[in-house]
Length: 267
Picture 1: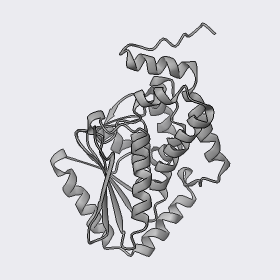
Picture 2: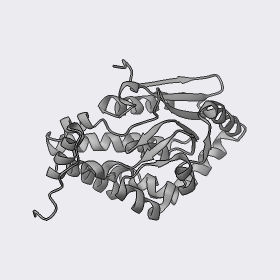
Picture 3: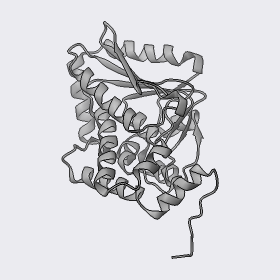
Picture 4: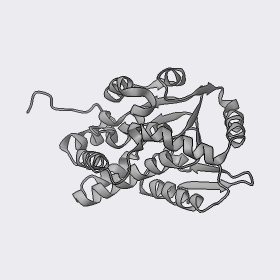
């Protein structure tokens, strides 16, 4: 297992690279990865010369959503403990979303569930041509409550109503078509394409960039603060759904590698 679930470094230009580092589970998130993202944001926020953040995933896949084994362990805990987990997850995405500097996500391989929320919270998203996407939560009897605001910002309500309800997988070109990613490039060119965007961002005034991003967020679904009532409601919905019998069956179907029995008509 990876000793450090999130790695980061900062070069002399002020470009930080934050790397999700659980390749053995396709960078699926658990408490360690969530806390690692929050810690990276805290530490980078103290760097006066920070100009751009590049987000990557180590290994073959960018981010496979939640670690469902971990979720199943959280599920039977108290409502307060479940809410704390959802709150930390929400805050990790929101910290990335509201960071007052440009963020660039480089996506290869799988980007599922919460991973789609993470890239929706980034300013520029470049996908390799082997990238595959899915908003998977309903497949396991869960909801994507805490990333719905970011998804609505990036792909619009109409597309969310399709892809978050079907949980179907779709490729990089469809992701570009609906607005989830900005550009699709060959896998071998992913790093170079990211470097080109970073160079363009560094040519711009840092204060003007921060002000422009803040203005864009003022009118966005995802621009809510942690003090908003909507924030509290989303966290509670996310954590409450995890503790339902439907989620229990969905997670069991994942662990047992079988189709879920949703018990339609048994109510």
